[in-house]
Amino acid sequence: MKPAIPTAAHKIRIIGGKHRGRRIMIPDRDGLRPSPDRVRETLFNWLQWEIAGAHVLDAFAGSGALGLEALSRGAASVLFADNDTDGVARLRALLAEWHEAHARVQSGDVFLLSPSAARYDLIFLDPPFADNLHGQALAHFLHDGWLKPHGKTYVEMPCTHEDLPLPAGWVWHRQGKAGRVFFGLLRRGAAA
Image 1 (cartoon, rainbow, N blue to C red):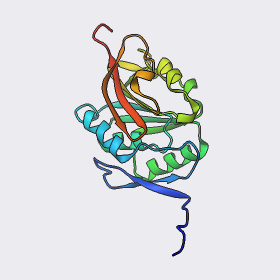
Image 2: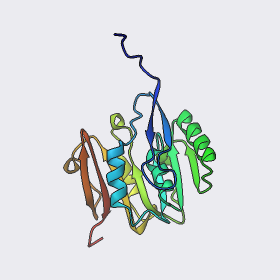
Image 3: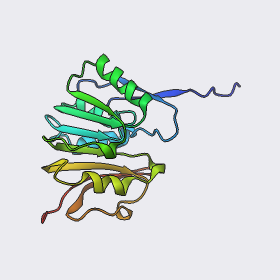
């Protein structure tokens, strides 16, 4: 029996919406870990009544799986931000191929982005696990300059929810775990 030949890339699929079933090519690169189908399915079930018409920021976009799923399900706009130039080029090409006019891709350090005057309904935060940026990302993005009053933030992380310190006024709205990946939605607490 021949040994399996390693592939340089694999594909993940869009789960729902107008692009359902389309595949996204994922290069085999250190630190690039797209959100698994099961995690995305759970997340977008949580968001099913909130995603249509939403303005979304996909910070640390990587493969773009989260933002692409949001566009497929009716998000009004998505800003993808990432510092990987190859990934940014792939996302721009994919958005052009899919004729997604309400999406932009910004290359560079996400911590140097300026808040949008319109602010976002939803922010996806899924930084590379090895870079240990989760606390810094929450401190940077969880404030009124980025989010609308009802806005939520999705976080995907390698640690338990209890191990990630939250900024004052923020609480876990929903939480989940798949294998070694912990994920959840944050919202402002009742007093915030």
